[in-house]
Image (cartoon, rainbow, N blue to C red; front, side):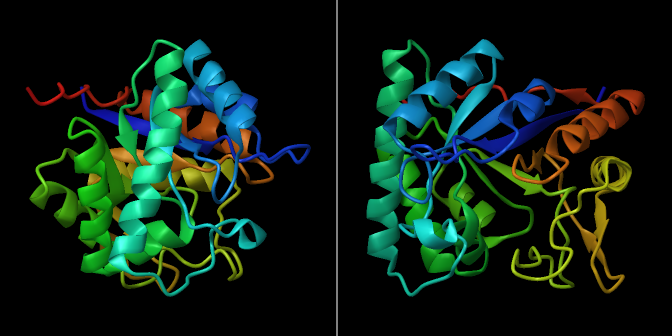
Length: 258
């Protein structure tokens, strides 16, 4: 039986501001990426989201982003590899401490938003992310866009790299994700998202907005919790994979070096 991971971004609320349908999405995923208090989240939200993830028995990952709450970390900016390294180390460490005091272990790292997209196409930034992950804990996996510089950099650093696909996001013809600022960037129809997920897993392809078939490797599927229909989309994807006899499970943890 084929096996894939389904991940979801979470912990994106801040103070009195609430974002996302986490309680509706988390029952259908196997791993969760928790914001680390920079682009979104705060210490209390991080703690509560870790508690929620443990209640659902999910694999927990850090979701570091750029320091830009105004645009939710989705606005690209000029940033050096050293700055990326420092930001990622800082954010992994913050979440890692919260996870550890609850008796659990951090399992992976997935950059957020603009940081994710820039690292996917800029090898120097991808290398900075990979070095930061390795230097904090080389047993952590890296989730990166299928076919991107992020996957290459993680593997070159000796890390486990999981190729990620997005059944609920539109793709450009070059295999990158259509920017959230553009129309129809997020797919909110459960049936369409589920059919895309099955094709990604079974055929290794996704169709771009201009009709171009894009080859992908689907080791982990991301479903977003901030869409208007997020819970229904996640449920439909999980059900469609079950019908196709595709098992959903978090990646097997890697032992810490030494």
